[in-house]
Every structure is written in C-alpha cells, then in structure tokens.
Image (cartoon, rainbow, N blue to C red; front, side, top):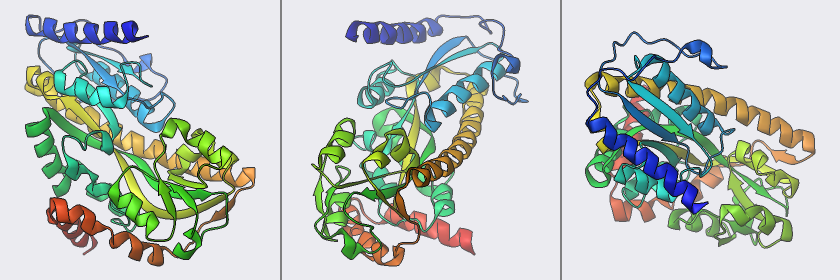
Length: 360
C-alpha cells in the first residue's frame, strides 16, 4: 500500500515538474458538461496558459461525504472551463496519504489542492482554531459569513498560511455545528453533563469547556470512537449530525442534544508552487471553481444534515432540540481566554466586528 501511495505521489510530482517545460497553450480537448452526472456551469473566462495536470485531494474524507462530492465537482468545473489547459483529478479517503501528510504534500508541491479539518493546518497557523471557539457564532448564518473567503479574519489567516506555510488558502468548506450525543441521560442544561465521560477534540479550549461543566474529558482517535462508545470507555461525544449518522454513532448513543456549541469548518488550500506556475487566467479559474464548489458543498451539507436528523429520529433516539443554549454559551465564552491569552484578541475582534456590521 505504501508503494502504491508513493507511486501516485511521484506521478503527481513529476507531472508538476513536466509542466514547467511544456510550451503548448493547451493540453487537449476540454471536458464537456455532458461528461458528468451533475450540472456543471460554463464559465465566461477565456483561459490560456501552458498545460498542467493537478490533483484535488479530500484527505481522509470519503467520496460520499459533502466535501468529497465538492472536490469532485470542483475538478469537473476546472476540466470543463480550462480550455484544455488544466487536467484536474480528484482523490479521496487517504488515496494519497492521510490528512497530515496531505498538508505536508501541499507544502512540498506533491499534492496540488487539498481539504481537511482546520486542526491539520493549525501546526502552520495556530490562529485558524479561532473558528472553533465554543459559541463564537450564534447561528449558521453568522458562521458562514465569518468564513466567507473575503471575510477579514479569513484573509488574515490565509495571508499567514501563504507566507509561513507555502500554501494558498482558497476557501473554507463546512462540516457543521457539533452536536452532543450520549448514552447516560437527556442533556438539556450544562448541569446534566456532570460525571459523563466525554470524548473531546484534542484542544485545550474544548477540554476546558466540557470539564467546566463537570464532564470527564478524554481524547480518543476518531477511528476508535465507535468501539469506545459501544464498550462504555466513554459515554459521550460531539460531531455534526451527518457525521453522527455516517459513523453510526446513533446506534450506541440514544440521546442527542442540538447544542450547536462548536462550528467545525474545513480548510481548502493549494500548493503555492503550483499556484505560481499558473497563468493569471488559470488562477482566476481556480478561484471561480472554488467559489462554486463552496456553494455546492454548503447546499450538500444542508441536505445531509436534514437527512441525518430524520435518520436519527426514525431510529428512535431522543432528540433535545431546544436545550438551554444560553447557559451552555456562558461556559463556552469563559474558555476563549485560553485562545486569546496566547494569540491575542485581533481575530475574535475582526469576526465580532464583521458580524456586528452585517447585522446593522
């Protein structure tokens, strides 16, 4: 398996090197919208440039996830509208390595475009974790506005990602608000968390958030979580609804609380070396494809979340749809200082000022 991954990475890298010496303005016939089983818009861009083949990688995410589907559609948009100058190939579910190695591949130009959870990029830009502060966003509309590509905090993070990580930030995809599941009792207030063994993200902010309510926080790898819940190693966890269904956590977690505590975006980035080799019109096409793919991914996520909630209810889980979010928010906001003491308040202020302006 390692040899297979190495071969694919070598092929991608060699393709990038070959591009530098290729003098033709197009690489062949552009793809047709009819080649796909979903609608692909036709762009007005007049794309020119030397031919290049690029990889679009969903990291550890499967093809049937909303991010995997968005990567597929982004590749299709590029192929249809690049005037034959770009061949874009999508990859999924660790085909080119795991999410950690994907970020390294973006830095080293062995992977061209990739998407993963923000935590995988936090080693390069720790400030990206600002979007996961508990109750930073009052609702989905605010969260989406704050993670728009032209949002002030996003631009600040992308600037640092490019200068310090050699990765061009393209967009944030959505994973959704994390919702609480457990097998002890219905959770309606923070007091209901007392004594529950809670699996949390490996983040000081997240650990403090749950422990401050009396939960016993522990970190368990996602690949081991279902078994840990099933065997009672932990009683609770939180994930977006579509993840709760796709990983079948609801089978061993009869109580679901829609507390909307943490928003978990996914970061879509591109190797700066690949970006710099492209013509201006090719770069413009990548931006256009990114914007369309983000819109598609959000629509797909909305559908997946609604379907997941219905699946959970049909299975017989007890869903607390209106917990005391104000009480949870008090505990959440009290943990922000763990982030701001280390990284300052600038990004939090940017987000709050933006959302305040949007509301006026």
